[in-house]
Image (cartoon, rainbow, N blue to C red; front, side, top):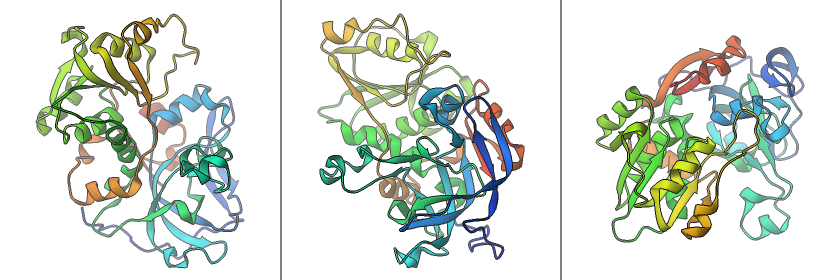
Length: 344
């Protein structure tokens, strides 16, 4: 995984106040703007030059109207620190980094209670009040940044945020005995999650729709089944829902045992972003625990990748360029597509 590409900032570096290319959503359509002015960093914030980004399911949901977000898309990236406003962590200048997506106030009751990911006044990269990383450059607080060692290349580093999200599932669960765990969904998040869960003392399987994705599990030695070939016996201790579809939660309720746990790893939305006709009564009748799960520990994800414990290269579906503009979103939305990586 050793970094063999350019590992130093470009001499013609981007700085605040200059124009950049950015893939932006205006509330109606996504388009590539060629002369977008990079926002000025606030004190303690850094300007980063994007080295590689990735398209996530959230980006596609935003373009379908979720979150009511308008701005530059994207939150999965690796980049170089070009400048910092102020004296915050000057040792990061020139470093290759990844970053957590929540920019927090540090003062509200959630922050003071150690729950910064739920800051009352947070902005979220590419999702809420903060331009994202599908651009030549982006701005994030230095406190969000994690330096990436030269032993981890960009293809691996760009998966750190998604892997951290998968790790969060394991952190939120108490594994006792040898439970039966099902991961629903064979997209990148599901395939990362099943790798993490397979390292626990549990019987783990992935349920998906695409034979080529299930074949990846075969390579890993992870149990897998096509969705059309499974029963609905309500015998799973834990079901992790990674499809992002209401039908996924419906299936999870059919698979989990009474007093079992369902983990919602993705936002549920149909094409109209309004979920209708979903019967949630099994959650009450069978006393099922429904657990939401979001972002996770970036440093732990980096460590797992550095130790070669997780296969991310097999999850690369397509490589594209920022110059391709909205075509990167179209590619990512294709049925059966894995992760679309975007070079500047």
